[in-house]
Image 1 (tube, rainbow, N blue to C red):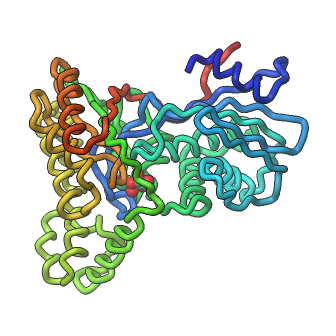
Image 2: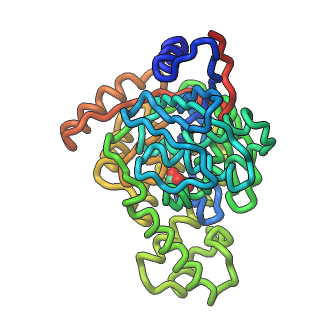
Length: 390
Ligand code: GLA
């Protein structure tokens, strides 16, 4: 949406054209490799997209918080309070959860008007949730001069999602959305939170995101069950080593799992996490060496492990990935995000990109009966104030 149109919607909603709102933007993210490792203290390699959430925000003289979005029809208005509780209105819980984190830290807010607009598809594994959380956090930090660091805002947003929304996510999404850097991916150690921005140079290739158009419904999904299975594995592995998380084991120790974990399901979950960490480390290394072919192979291996050992894919994701890989110019394809639906990410030769999308769309429609969507994203910066003059 054009900035002028967005501002027009703001004034239609809230009036008072003499007082301009301020614009903030927060990206969505795509994870290139390193899935279901973040809450296991492991490695991830996501990047921020040029798709995301825009927020126009303005202070008011009264004591009300007014929320509205271009994406849904339900608005919400509430007087300021010391602490909020879950509203039952899904999208409003994300900003409200973040506001709570500010209130809990003793920040005094004033009345505010919010208008959001998101162009990252919801529930598609591209972090629309982290995006709306972080855009809110960055805006409040700026408006009330609260001086929180990006890392503080990332942690506050994750907390909002864990405790207010009730989704027990790891830190990857909020981190990627907060620390994204144009044309770079983020190699993040989710245990220590140390990270490195690695240039994502794809030369004759491009990233293509394919959307199954099957919504994940994360909170209802098996996400928390997987977390529980990983905790179980850590518990059983205490007999082998005093580890805090699965990422303290390396790929050379995968052979040990058989001895300590009898349940093959729990064992396979652990195997995925440990092997995935190994793949992320290698993927970053080969990317730095410009070896995209190997990078693509590692993406493929990652998906296979998520499909067979971690079991978070499903027919829609598997169809896009396995059919996509057969097409010319594809060097890697995998699911991205939590899984159970949502999106895949593929590296495809630029010259073959258009055919890839046409063919894959046909095959997917034939097999699944749904039309997929495709995005050719640019890699952008993290959440920030946007230049915006009316
Ligand atoms: C979701 C969660 C992340 C991460 C991924 C899987 O996106 O929000 O924290 O666990 O799933 O890698």
